[in-house]
Image (cartoon, rainbow, N blue to C red; front, side, top):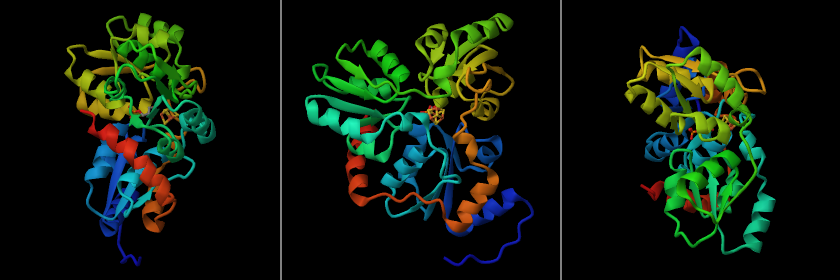
Length: 313
Ligand code: 13P
Ligand code: SF4
C-alpha cells in the first residue's frame, strides 16, 4: 500500500498521521507505557479490548498489548490486518501451556469441559470449549452445568480463585503462572501495608492466594480501576502491573496508589508488555509488520469458544 507523504512534528504526530492514513485503530492494554496509552483510541482490559476489536470499522488494528491478545483480535477480524509493535511481546502463561498435552487431555477425557483463560495460544484456544478472562472467569464457570467436570487452564492462581468463588469441586487446574503476579509476596505486601495503614488493597486474581486473602477487592485491571474510582477510600495498594497507574490517575484522580515490587525484578512491570515502544508502534503502522497471520482452520476452531465467552452476560 502506498502512503502519501506527511509532515509530522513529533513521534506522536507521526503515529496519529499514519493511523489516519492506514484507517487504523490503536488498542492498548492498561499495562502499556503511558505514552502509548495516551495515543490509544481505546485503553482496556483483555475483555474490553476483545469486544472493541469485534465492533471495529477500518482496515488495521494496531494492538498495543501482547501477542495472544492480538491473535484474539485477528480471530474476530479475519479480513483485517492486525499488527503488534513487537513480535516478542508474549506471556509466561502462554508459554506454560503448550498445545500437545491439552490435545492429549481432551482425547483421554472427552467428558471434561475445557475452560481456557484468554492468555493462551491460538492453538490452545482451538482445543477449548469456552474462553474466559480475569473479568468474567467466575461467570463463565458458573455458566457450565454443575455436573460437568472442568479443566481450567493455564493460570493456577486464577483457577484456584475461581474454584473458591464458585465452590466447584470438579474443577481441575493447570499449573501455569504469570511471572509478574505469581511473584508478588504477601510478606512484602504486609510491609507496605504497615507504611500505609489506611490504604485499601486491590489485587488481580493472578496473584497468589495469600495475597488475595489480604485484598479488599479482587478483579481484572479495568475492574480494579472502576473499584478505586468509586471507592470512598483515598489510598490503595495495587497488586498488579504498574502500567495501570496511568488509568488510575485519570479515572480516580486525586487518590494515591502504592505498588509492591515483586520477587523477580524488584518492580511491578511485565517485561513482555514493556517491549512495545512508540518507535516500534510507528514502524508497525508504516510497514504493517509484525503482522498476525493464522491458519484459517485454526481461527475458525478458536472462534467458537471465543463467541461462547462473549455471549456470557
Ligand atoms: P486483564 O484481563 O485484567 O486485562 O489481565 C490480562 C493480563 O495479562 C493480566 O496479567
Ligand atoms: Fe502475561 Fe503476566 Fe504479562 Fe499479563 S502480566 S501479559 S499474564 S506475563
